[in-house]
Length: 133
Image 1: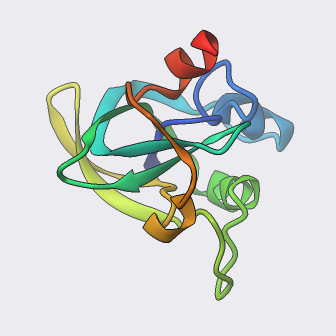
Image 2: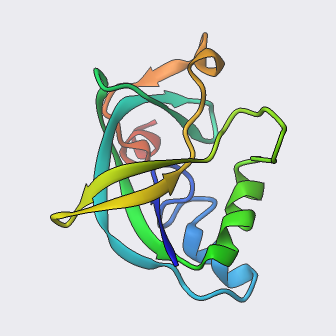
């Protein structure tokens, strides 16, 4: 098992809801541990957001789930993260505070150069932003 921080379309109710991704492949339902945030800048790529990690940025809101390791390749496919191939998203680990506990979480940020010319999402919450458009 491992933990994952999701901030965009992998969040509950979104187009790539992590729970539905697991169900499509017969994997155990991800267990919501809680909500967390990390400092960065969130950008609007149209149908999905991209997070650039930035200590001077704002809190970007997300959900933290405990998942089976077998779900990671599926999430990598959704985010188009392939070994040895550069892409928009990259798989990384980060230490976050979740419900008062420090834990390592996998997440999928984008690289800073990839957001050139892309609108920043001021509030740091993809779901709230998407609903307000």
